[in-house]
Length: 128
Picture 1: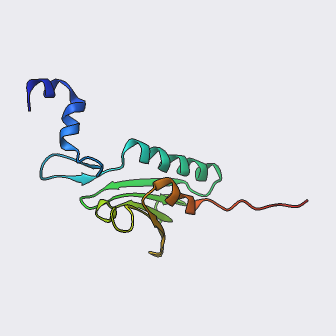
Picture 2 (picture 1 turned 30 degrees about the horizontal axis):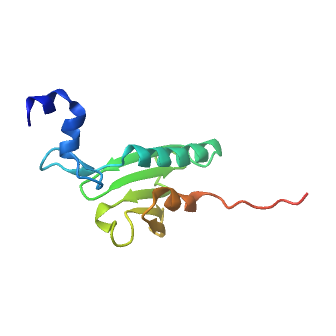
Picture 3 (picture 1 turned 90 degrees about the vertical axis):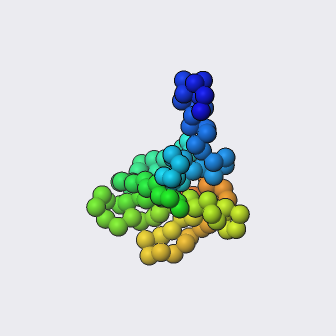
């Protein structure tokens, strides 16, 4: 790295990040991460469910093979849902998956907002 790269922290992070893969870290310690747009989609969905009183806690894990966002009804329980990003599956089934507590894959795809839509309640018509 040049001296100019050391003075600009953003250029240093660009050199460690694989393009489009969402992998970050120093050589030998790479891990999959959610980028800013993915986190925005995750927290938008999380905020709506917290406002409805369904979810109360979350956790984020950045692992070597995947990044996992878990949501909980109460802290200290088993997660209700796991939203996983697995870059190895990006070309096959899609990098994103919503997995229920029992291990059932509810939705898998290439577009995170579309995958998260499975967690939204369908709109029902109420006739008064």
